[in-house]
Image 1 (spheres, helix red, strand yellow):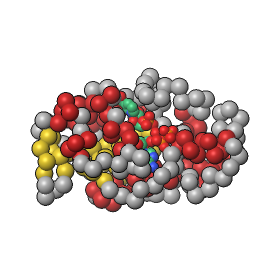
Image 2 (cartoon, helix red, strand yellow):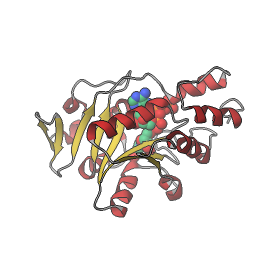
Image 3 (cartoon, rainbow, N blue to C red):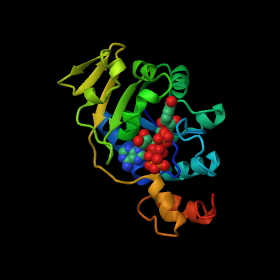
Image 4 (cartoon, helix red, strand yellow):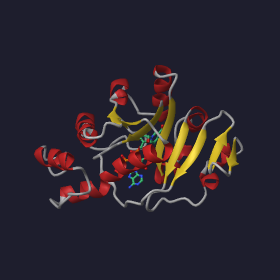
Length: 216
Ligand SMILES: Nc1ncnc2c1ncn2[C@@H]1O[C@H](COP(=O)(O)OP(=O)(O)OP(=O)(O)O)[C@@H](O)[C@H]1O
Ligand SMILES: O=C(O)c1ccc[n+]([C@@H]2O[C@H](COP(=O)([O-])O)[C@@H](O)[C@H]2O)c1
């Protein structure tokens, strides 16, 4: 099976998250995409007051109507900082026969050299880098961390970078959606509409639990 992994803080999950997961599934023939909320995102250790349980619940609501999407609470169960390499290793150990595709937005892809054991991520997992407004990239090769660029060669027909381990790095040029969780939090805090930026059940959850407006 080909499994996509979409990690995120998901504070809250929004329609661009769902769309990039769907485009990755469609373009790369993935059997399913697993959304993995970070318990403690390494670069956002103080994400505020919103609990892992609330973020997880919203992701569960967001994917409920899509049989190709699932949610894992493994980073909450593991505890501590949510390093992606630990998650990838755990998934590979649990499902040794599956092929994993780590889906990552352009902003995170640009910063990946600051991630824990980032070189190991490219050596153990396929990576799908997704264009994002404000963080688009022209060339996949030039966006790679310089320190590991020599471990790849460009496969022109397949339009991908191939790692010496056999894993690949792919670019996904989908529809650019300028949606972010921070903008949604800002709107919700001001009592403004977030309709159509998040799925209906997520909008409902945010309203019912008074998320973001009561300092939560
Ligand atoms: N609009 C978007 N287009 C493409 N990728 C996105 C988009 N929004 C988020 N992503 C990607 O989804 C993953 C999880 O994102 P995250 O949960 O941090 O949401 P965010 O909108 O970036 O949050 P915040 O605004 O709080 O920083 C990251 O890899 C991020 O790059
Ligand atoms: O492993 C790391 O060092 C690392 C550093 C920053 C972010 N990540 C992961 O990248 C995903 C998106 O993170 P963020 O902070 O943009 O929401 C989420 O799954 C994080 O756990 C991972």
